[in-house]
Image 1: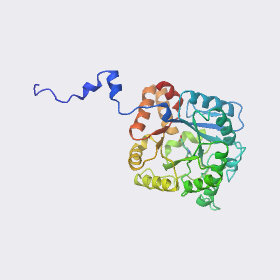
Image 2: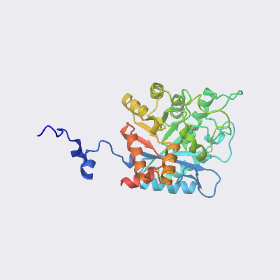
Image 3: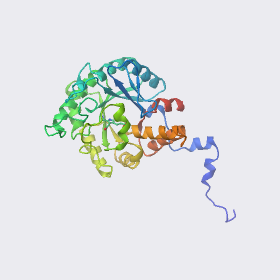
Image 4: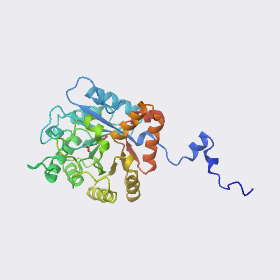
Length: 327
Ligand code: PBG
């Protein structure tokens, strides 16, 4: 070999689609995708979410149809969010057996419950009139321990209606322990907890607040959600949640926090979940609509990167579409 040619030729393994497919280090599969879904009480037709083209606030009927489509596409799970018709300070409808999520859960448990994992977001912000994730003290702070009592009750209501996995997303201290104790005490030791462990106070949640109608009426979430400046703090949150009984841990958002996903993956031996949030979805859809990026390729690249960073499971609003493309 002449010295002017390089000895190592990595390009050999990139020459053809078949070769690239064979040597790919990371793959996507429908089963590791989870579809977040919104169901709203008291609407006659599904309502499009303007900042999330392709995403809807569902009626109970349209939810059933969309969940069935997800299951048929092989999507691994759905994460359900409810939007009640009436909100109050305590978020009373969150643990009402006839609250919208509980009704939808019963529908889904009988429709698709054997073919897809039916999960529920467990928080108060969609249910409170002030839009905060917990109940408030008279001075307007979130009362951590009073909120835990509400979460415990919501967990039991969701489990009784058929949720297989509850996802506490409120970032209250001690929430996983409180929920685990409540589930066990009410005869639901088999219901798992997917803890939103490392959840940042993120501007990327913007479009979700339209979808779930849960923008805080005053203040923000930075006294309980994490500061984007911090990464070691995420490990602290993850280990606390595991000690308290979490079965899976989540990092959220995903795309801007891939370093955190990797650190968590390297530190734990439970499934690591990453949530590709509403703002990540909206940015790609908006840029694609303007013709500035290739929509389909960007979607696949964004999800592959989340997997490459170490997430075992990704929540994404594109779950059904991507699952179909993969099969
Ligand atoms: C809280 C919750 C939020 C999201 C999921 N669960 C909003 C928030 O914390 O403000 C955001 C998800 C997204 O942006 O897609 N119940």
